[in-house]
Every structure is written in structure tokens, then in C-alpha cells.
Length: 397
Image 1 (cartoon, rainbow, N blue to C red):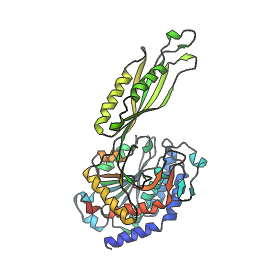
Image 2: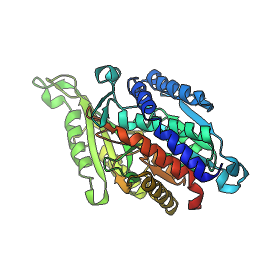
Image 3: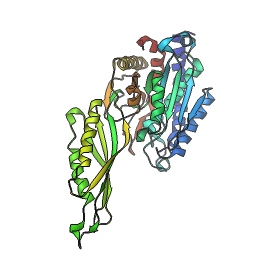
Image 4: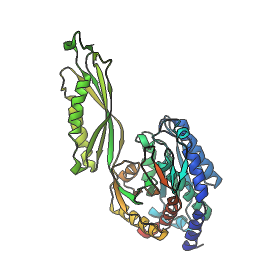
């Protein structure tokens, strides 16, 4: 079967899977899957496994202790790929995360629904629709063959909290990969993402000394006052011209309203564009945390999670142009866009693998009750991804 025939059969088969995709998405969205709900994320994984194995695709489980297990599905390349050598024998990775940001029980409160041309529900776009798309693309290649190399579907379970257990699996897979397509949601514009900020998530803990706020105020040392002063200094590091933002998004502390606060905590979100900016700003945060604005306080800083930036290389630019052409032939426009959000694609890009992000179905307002998916984007985005895979040899990658 020649390449044009395989492409026609794959895209035609995907065109007939719209309702099946919607039903798979309905089941997935209606399954709990917050990052800290290992059982829920693994239940979503069980759905992925059932579907893929029903199409004859083997699935390996890579156990994770605290968060959702990683699943690794494999589809062999076509005859030409098996005869190839060098980089053409390396894996083509379709990646996505199964976890969401929502608390347990959210699917019962807001189950999957379709209104007009949009679908709603927790994680419907970010990124359960992308998981479903990858499942069906893998099934199409398992059914018709023709992939220009081995396909790997990597389904992880803790991206929304920085992939603390998924990152080593992702990086190991990327080091063996030819290219990576990450199925984060396509932008509301229909674009894909060619660049992302990096992010560092930190917590500072401050120790003061308790005292009655009326009877012996002068003996107290307020950890909350120290936290307030540190927050001002940390926020002052924001430099919008360089794409550097600092946000202390969670604070806690104190013992009672009539006690000088003996402790306080602030959680810090740093976003940056250039890799070199990371160490500079983290170093300045360490200096602020080490300094006592209120004499007698002490503080510590701990990194709780981290994403690396996605930066476009000449190789990833060729991958983007390949996808853009595949999208145009499918019938939609997909330009490249920069995102301030972070994703696992930063890890794959950082090890040197050409990476394209946000190739999933189009959606918006992620992490909110208004999160939506454009239902009619599911099939075209799957078809464009399949076309890009089939034409990968044209890029020289």
C-alpha cells in the first residue's frame, strides 16, 4: 500500500470516529483525575489501556509511587521504516498527561456536557481531549500501518504539579526519540505552541516568636510581617520586558488573631523565558529569604516543582512547518504561538529532541469552571497529526 493510499485510509477512518471520540472523552472527563488522586488518574489510565489493547496495541505500565502510573504504548513502523537506519529508526512520541487540577468529586458536580459547538467538564481540553486524540491516532496507525518509524504513546499522570515522578520517564523517552508531539490543547486561535516559559514553584517558611498581642506585644516577632515584606521584595523582581514574573499565590500563617504570629508560609511562582534567567532570579529569591526584614525572624526556601522552558530550535522549527502544512491540507490554519504556561514539552525540548506542543484539539479557559473544548476540532486535529507523522521523512529530522 503506497503512502497516499495509507494517508487517505487513515484520515477517512478518523473522520468516521467523531462519535466514538466524544464517547471516550465523556467517560474520561467523568472520571476523577486530580494530580493527587492516584487511583483516579490510574482509572483514566485503565480506560486508555482498554482502548489501545482492543486495537492490538501493547501497553507497558511504568509504576509511580505517589501519582498516576505512566503508560507506554507502542505501534511498530511500516515496512519502509523497518528497513531504515539511523535517526529514522528512532521513536516518534505522542505525549500527554491524564491528570487535572480539579478536586475529587468535580466530575459529579460538573459532568461532561455539550452545548452547541462546545464541550464542557473538568479537564475536557487540558488535556483529556488530547489523550483521546492520541489514542485514536495510534489506533489508526495500528490498523493501517505506514508510520515512518516506531510510534510511542506516552501517557503520564502528574504534569499539573510539575511532573515530579513523570519527568524522569519523559526525559528518558525523549532521549531516544526522533520527535515529540505534545497534545496539550490547541490555542483558542487554533494555533499550536512553539515556545513556553519555564516555571519554578517554591515555598518559603518563616519562623517568628509568639506573644500576646495586647499583654506583651513587644516580646513577639511577627512571621507574618516578615512574610509581607518578603512578598514585596519578591514581587519587585518582576520584569515584564524580559518575560519574568513573580507571584506569591498562596499564604498562610499565624496562631490566632490576638497572637503575634510565630510562623508563616508563602508559595512562590516564578515564570521566565530565557534559561539563563532561572538561576539569576532564584538566586535573588534566596537572598531575600535569607535576609531578616524583621529582626529575629528566620526563613527557609524549598523548590517544590519545576518546568523547563520550551525554546524553538531550527529542528523544531522544521517540525512546526511540517505540521502547519499538514493542518492546511486538512482544512485549518495553525500558526505558532508563545505561551506563558508551562508543560512537559519543556523537558523533551531541553534534552535536545525536536518538540511541538499544543497539537491537541482546540480549547480554552483551562483550570476554570468555564473550560471548554471545540468539539468539531477533534477529528481535524487528529487528521493533521497523522498527516504530519506520515510526512516526517520530508523534514530531514
